[in-house]
Amino acid sequence: MISATDRQQAVSLIKEAVNAGARESLACKELGLTQRTLQRWRKDGVREDGRPHAKRPAPSNKLRKDEEEQILAIIHQPEFKSLPPSQIVPALADQGKYIASESSFYRIMNKHNQQQHRGRSKQRTSKTVTSHRATAPNQVWMWDITWLPGPVKGLFFYLYLVLDLFSRKIVAWEIWEEESAEHASQLIRRAVISEQCVIRKHPLVLHSDNGSPMKGATLLETLYNLGITPSRSRPRVSNDNPYAESIFRTCKYRPEYPEKGFVDRTAAREWVLGFVNWYNREHRHSGLKFLTPEQRHRGQAEQIFKQRKQVYEAAKASNPNRWSGETRDWSLTEEVWLNPEKATSVQVPPKASN
Image 1 (cartoon, rainbow, N blue to C red):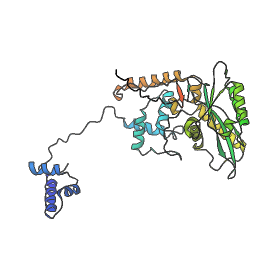
Image 2 (cartoon, rainbow, N blue to C red; image 1 turned 135 degrees about the horizontal axis):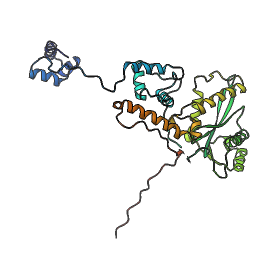
Image 3 (cartoon, rainbow, N blue to C red; image 1 turned 180 degrees about the horizontal axis):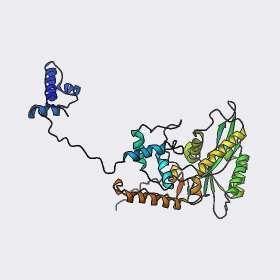
Image 4 (cartoon, helix red, strand yellow; image 1 turned 180 degrees about the vertical axis):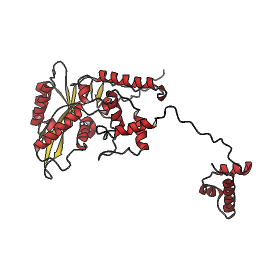
């Protein structure tokens, strides 16, 4: 609040500045005032602020101090210290606990200077490119190859990886010292056996980019014999296989990823084995409403979402004034697309009048 004395002094200073040749608007700006305020003071006279000095009551849904401390304690637990609230809250719901919403977690973290960008990666950007439809596991697979650094500069190992579109589960992987269609053929055969695919009853599409191993005669013959339909990205379009590219990014930005390279192929296989186990069974995927790929692949989504909904409903019943609407929507679409064709509107010329 500005006292009457301070207002009178401000008016005098502005008048003195204007008499000395200054512009009134700039003089007001220097004092943090507007010309409209100055005009009102001149018209009505300088007097004390008449607004009531009432203290606003705290909102009824405000978190208590002990709840804030509980949130801080949770985010510092070893299992949660490297996870964002979007991962922590569903994990707590799976344990039958509800403390606060994700936005409340973020707000408390910001308040206590706990919200920081983790890892070496830049902020993610979304890409919506996807060309086949999956409504269940083992209908559409995507595969690709990426290099892993070896013990010396210029020496690499090659990670072959097959991903299921519907569940995002890694259904097969292997590491070799070169890229070849023969190795890819072995991996696809292994994946079909491990997933017990009956392709004659349930058709399967295998999507990849346009690399030479993907177009090799050996792989194409294998796919033909197995009854798998090959699919490839458009030429010179790098984002037609986004899920495969995304999982390689997740792999290489893991905190324990060895930046200096792997000693040998055995070391690389051991590390990737640990990554695959974590990704399939522990990682709550944001694209799956924070289910693990294994849970989605095994059809456990409905049971888990039902439990989460019960936890949220119980939390709302115990403190309804913290909820302005319905509880969180714990449901997941049963239709996933890879590179859908964009609908184009066709302009139909009007009929000629007779």
